[in-house]
Image (cartoon, rainbow, N blue to C red):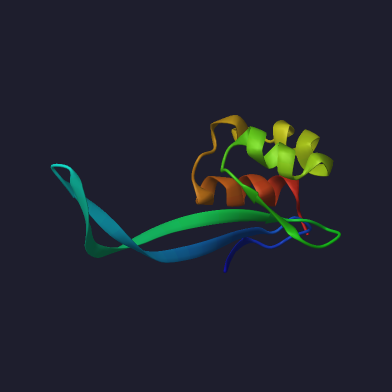
Length: 98
């Protein structure tokens, strides 16, 4: 995991790679196809009491994952327009200083 923001509520980034066999449909039969590697990124917001909750990088998702931080997040200018991990690292730095 990569730490994007280190504070009371850390923002974590996890890379997931999964092998998936694609199926090939031809007429009435399905044949196993080639192996495909699917890569995706999942974000987590750590909790002060321990554990972490999976989040989407939007204001509503962050507020649901951290109810104690919800008012502070809404008060940060530009938090409702933040969409990238760099945007959210900056928002959390302002709302959750160490």
